Length: 225
Image (cartoon, rainbow, N blue to C red; front, side, top):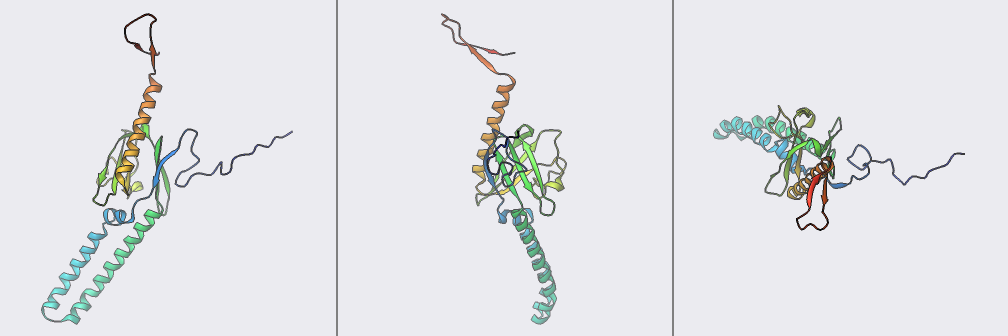
């Protein structure tokens, strides 16, 4: 006789931004997305692109303006400004899509990065693989959190971009980019990594505290074999 077992609702549903349901004992500490301004201006460098096209337009139009030919100047710089506007619009669209398709998650055991516009991928970074984590804060309170992996663990830079630390191509570092209130998030990540390391140390070499009856000396600490 078969016996039916009732499961709680959404027992097999993964939380947003995660590849699957969380294992027992694991819980989310923080989850968020990059801010659009940070991705668009700091990762895609829209400001530099705008300045470049503005410079090209000024270089081409100044001779006409100096000669008093405003119509000729407008005809000359028009195509350049049009291309510049198109490039800026394209980069802004890529930035918006990048923000919409990105989810950063910090649990009590790992960092999970759900990234990718055309080809989404999920990057799982258990704390045991993390060597160091840093923080670069900006004036608006947002910031970047680069994560340096232990030697032997490598993710291709192109797979990570723009969620990678700039200029670290030979040894790419995943990075939580343009995080609002980055100081708070960095503190959450730091505490989680520290707690995980303490648990690992206790599991590897647990300590037994023993006190001898009638002895006045302090307890003796002995490492269990």
